[in-house]
Image (cartoon, rainbow, N blue to C red; front, side, top):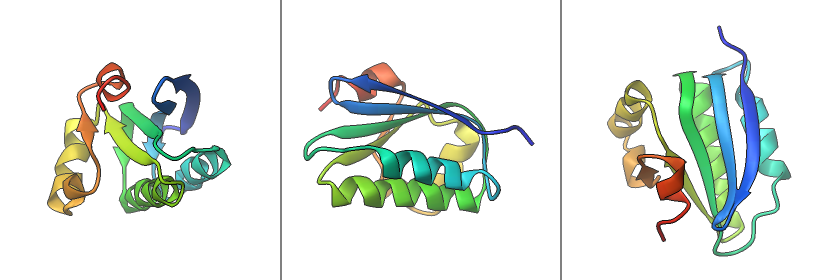
Length: 113
């Protein structure tokens, strides 16, 4: 198991969180806490950069859905960037490709409207 590490930065479109390590039962609360602590404004895009995500279980997927709900409540948008193939496959299987916009990388996610 790899520990979860989350870094944040601001982009012109809104906050960017880089999620590094394993997003699973023991660590998913960290993502929920980071997202809950953000001040999102209407029209912003919260980008979760998953390029260095090693593993994501159902608790991690639930945390992604919670982040989406938090962004929606703030009248903002959540986008996923650089989603690893194994995680992308699962998100597509469960239909979350209909909920989350996916971008190849963070630069594209923070410049595309």
